[in-house]
Image (cartoon, rainbow, N blue to C red; front, side, top):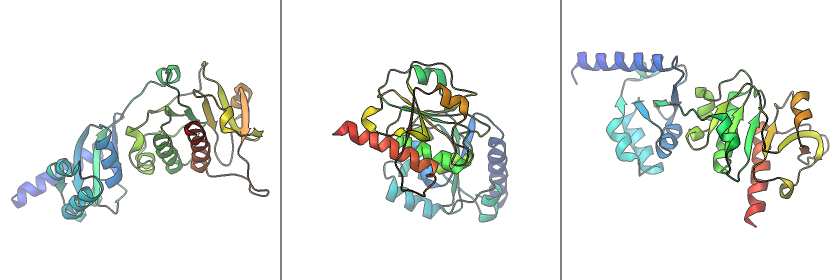
Length: 256
C-alpha cells in the first residue's frame, strides 16, 4: 500500500473499532484466544487487526491450524501506534477483532429440555470472574449462563476472561429469574453439604458474589440450598472456582 492508503486504512479501522464499542450487537475480542474460539464456534467476525502479523500467523498455526488460513487472509496489520488507538486494552498477543454478539433468549434457555444445568450468577461484580465462569461452563458443557445485575455479561473484559467461549455456550442477562420448572439450587454457606448425585440434570445452579452471597429473595425461592465443604477458617471461594467445583463434580459423577 501507498503511505496515503495505509493512513486511510488505519483511520477506517480506528473508526470501526471505536464505533463497535458503542454498538450493542457487537463486541470487541481482545487477544488471540477470543478470536480463535470465536471463529471455532461460528462467530461472525467483521474485522481483525494486528500489530504483529508474523506473530499472529505463528500463533494461529500453532494453536488453531484449522483457522490459520482464514486468520492470515483477513488480518490487517497496523502500526503499534494505531493499534493502541483501537481500544483501551492492548493484548500482548497483538490482535483485536470485532464480532457480532450472540443474543440467546433467556426464557427459551430455561425451557430447554436439554439435560444440563443452567448457571445463574446473581449480580456478579467482577467482569473477569464472570468471564471465567463462562469459560468453565463451556468446558463442562453446561446449558448456559444467565446473569442479573448491572454488568453486561458480553462486556469485552468478560469475553476476554472467557477466552471467547461466550460463543460456545449461551450467555445472557435478565432482570430477575422468572418462574421456571427447573429446580433451583442455591449455593450458600449455610446450606446442606453439596453432593453431585443429588443435583438433577436440568437444575439451575445459583451463585452470588464472593462478598454479598445470594440475596434473601433468591434464597427464599430456592428448592434447595447447598454448600461446598471447605476447610475451617476459609470463608469463601472465588466465584469461578466455586462454579468449576460444582460443575465438574456433576460432570464426573455422571460419567462414572
